[in-house]
Length: 146
Image (cartoon, rainbow, N blue to C red; front, side):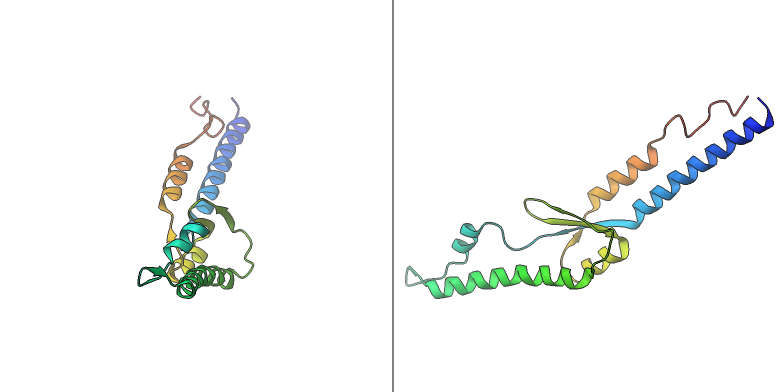
């Protein structure tokens, strides 16, 4: 193998290594927040809002309790809306029991500091581990020792 071929292999290796480090840096700069709204099923939530007076349902008080429950969900959503300000690069997913947002670390940290959700650590651990341990044969030229 001539010097030009060896140099090409070394530069290819450095380029692929740089690409992996850059991808890992982007991944590590993102975090995911889980936001749980205090609202689940309208019938169940209405029943759980029930107020009883002398063994009978106080319908006005029950409706007021349900309104307060809905208002607390609205407050969380308005806080979220007012603090993301049309930022690009936020991905969202709706799950059965929570909403997840993935964005730059500083955005997620500020939302957590506002008290509207919690950091999703399971996603970060599995992504970082798989990215840092995965390699392909293209990344490491086998004939550098020749």
